[in-house]
Image 1: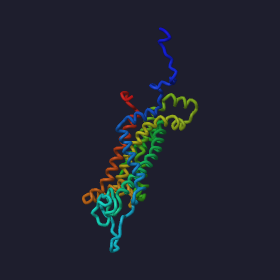
Image 2: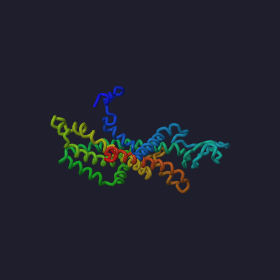
Image 3: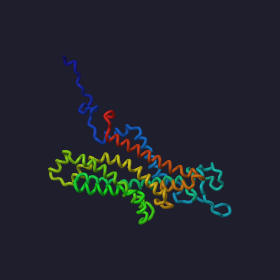
Image 4: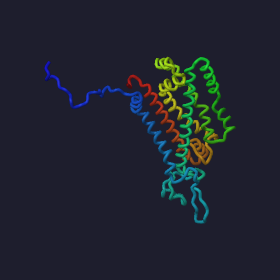
Length: 323
């Protein structure tokens, strides 16, 4: 073996092995998530709906509560009631041929394009606010219950069993007696009913993690219980909690739609996905086009968030063949 058999590499940095360089946990999660075509599809669908919900009502020609009307030659006001979808110049309507209604108008003469995206905005705001608060309450409750165990866990779990045994409709009916209809009632209903699932997942993760070596080391060094719960255990349970949040958001959106559909949710002229479906359902035999936009938006949101939830679940706990 001679020196000529070897060649020194001096023109590139070989201090880091690019093929086997270290990869952080969340970077690995992101890589696995974006490799999942269904998860990416769900993310695109939800992003498109959120984009339209934010910007469509802003750039729309009409406001969501505006009754579109014109004055005829005799001075009488003509309202654009129940017009089918149309583009400017393509309608046979004499008074509104120069106006564009992409989704048509409702029976009050309001533009359904604007109302659909305004309703999607309201439904998303309600769902995100309610689930965020539920995440805080449920996660804290479950971690405390699982960490302390014993009598504390027994009492807290019995309370959850009692709260979970009460039918949701009973809770909503009681709230409707003492609270006015509107966003507050919907959020309160979601807060009371949706935190239980979060707490069960947090408790299960805490029971699994509280005997780990790093928790024992923190306890030995004199760390307090709440420091261990929220500084040591909570960061290691964030993955399953995020997955649960992704699955809870479509449930919250559907619950809001149901409450508005049965008449205890959003109050007119404000609108949400559920109130638009309820209004379209009342006219489904005469004007079936009115119910299609909110139903499609609801279906896309439900599908998108469920695909994202599945993607996070697989990315946070990838299978061996996906590694």
